[in-house]
Length: 412
Image (tube, rainbow, N blue to C red; front, side, top):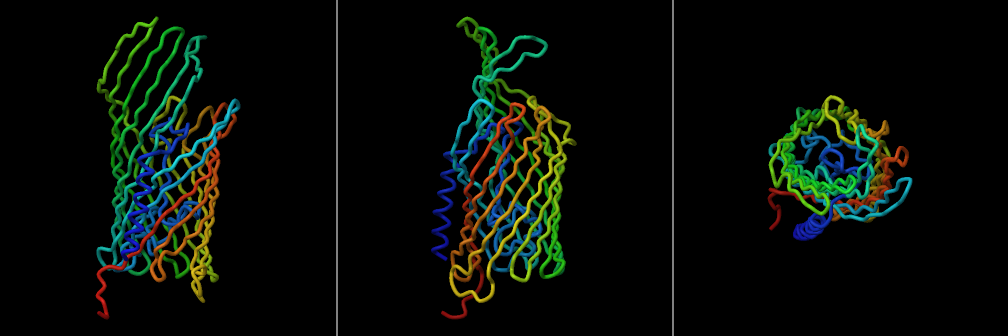
């Protein structure tokens, strides 16, 4: 147990240091609240981020709060993760590369009764880290153009409190409350002829979102799950300073003034999934999610919000019989994920397709503790219509620890 505590402390220090040093950067994070994070717990990232129907038995499943209803008694689950991403961005004119390391999540779960359990987690929700230089844009109702330079930083955090309860032996229900909070700093300057206007803005956001879930065990090999996320209003305010420069003469138009801004709206979302275990201990997972962004009745100055579809599928394999060595206990996984995207720019979707492979390396002989290592390759966006294509290689490390608590010793 002491070894696991030391390992957890070292891994937590690593990912928290990574979080303080670097945040995800993407040109598409200029939209809305920024690029949304995929904070998959345990080995979920290696099966294409699928798993709505998987129970939280060996590790925490953050895709469905109902999974907590199947958590084993006297077990305490802890999960912490981080990512390293190498990305290349290209359009019709140029190409560049970036590296960054990200904090993914820290979470714990424990049973409160024989039929229920609770989980707590902290994870990034979005990141708005971008830089745009010398972008030439037309002035509306004019033949002139202006030059835009913009940079942004910050994002939102997500503190999650989830509860799952099992009804009978085959049905579990769950509820999650997500507390979203954070700020985004946006600095821009607009150049028209010899006049430059700079706008320095900090936007503050906070809101609450509720999610419901259920899981049904059809038989010992087949289970299904359903989730629903409520539409939510994210309250927003901003502090802004505006300075104009004309022929080397500066004029302060406003300085750190507070403004009310339009709130941001998260859509109604629902998801369904299934999990099937075959005789050779091959586990198949399949998920579908729908986000009704059209119903939020909001838009972005650079594009429009459209309904979003996500498809995820994964396979995992491990031996459970005739386990003779450490390598027999390793779990191997692979998966695919497709996201249609919720932004449309010039009638072009910003979609995302990724493939993943991974292994779960046991940490101890008898517990469920494991180090989950996943490699993913993906593409986001396209070069057509003046957009940017993003290719990325991602290495995810998740440490899942399982401790058995409150069990009396049989021998002294």
